[in-house]
Image (tube, rainbow, N blue to C red; front, side, top):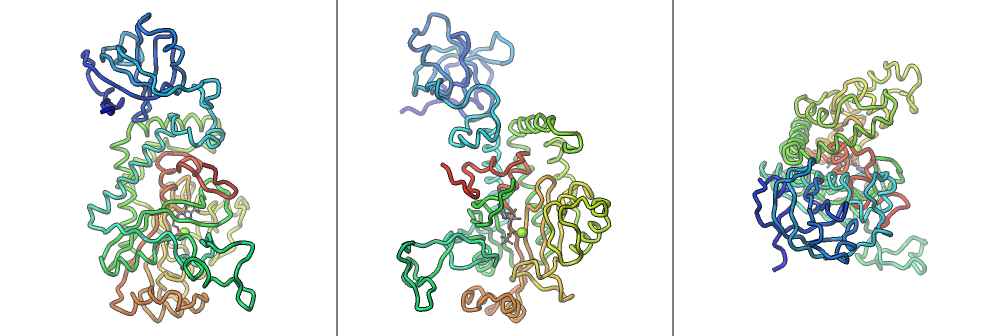
Length: 479
Ligand code: 4AD
Ligand code: MG
């Protein structure tokens, strides 16, 4: 058996008493032919391995280079040096894998995030990405724990679908038809009956519609899976492939939906605050250092941890879209024409600059906007009595903008089909969805949390490409 080792995170919390320990990991640095900083990915903190002079041969010492992998056994003793509590006094040392430091792209110095994106296959070996991805893991785990504790059923909705849940037409096609000799119908359109599924299919943009099928049987379900959007948005908060959490609840109205979303966000933040304190502290310092380069007015008012604590301790501001438009219209920012997209009036779609103004400048806290104009929202949202708005809600977070989108669903068959007709969505395509409204329809609601945007919020990383292992963005699918 090979895998007998102590993880460095666990080891660093032990009292050094000369105990025999085996560790395995990768060399971060090697000084004076004597001191190895060894990292195994369990924490950013390295273990100092001390090699007694003369104990190991020259050849072995030469092979201890940055990122070489080692197995070291020895005694854990109190450190004589300062900077660390304990050392591993090496007795045996085995090089598991050599690393040519001449060509290894990660040097023990600060690299830019842009450069690290080009070597995304190695960037997990840096402190920043070590922390980001441990936090990402913890958030994902907390998501499941939250819903499991509440009795929700985790539902795996399909990745390949024939429907456009959001009706926005931003889909990646899935096909095995040849490009050069595409089978055609008489009218020149593609003959999908010859395609793999015998019909046109795409990668899912959301699991919601299938989620509604689950909610109207189990009561409460959630999905947590990859979703795909072929929107050509090259921004710091858009990915073509991102992960979304979509709870869907029968017997919920819009207010119940907002309450659950707030509780959920607090729960997962609290979880990482407890479990990943060290990583968050590292990321908070990283962000503070990064912001030192910015002019004063561009810096965050709160540190990362302070911000997360604030979210735990303060309710989100809730206001209608209509009230938000008034605030924006009356703002000095608008009067001084500082918005790139001026506030033209009720009915306009909000841009992220507007959302961020509300959250960062006006309320200085997360905001839930609700009751949006029907015209700018999806077909499935419940029509309000006023005949103009729908029971939609978006949660806007400081530094990010929209982090959650959700709504109470239109459960009334007639209203739903009328709306679909207006939006040219054929009933035949969604016959199965409409069946939920035919057979025991119930008031229900749900929302989608963009997982990467949540990870951005918690880690303080400004670019969404730095919180997913291998980002998919326009013109980029390396690794
Ligand atoms: O607002 P969206 O489009 O809502 C839905 O898909 C609904 N079906 C959700 C539901 O009610 N079940 O997307 C939900 C969230 C957004 O608020 C945002 O956080 C994230 O998904 N999101 C993206 N994240 C990264 N890159 C993109 N291109 C994203 N598009 C949406
Ligand atoms: Mg949205």
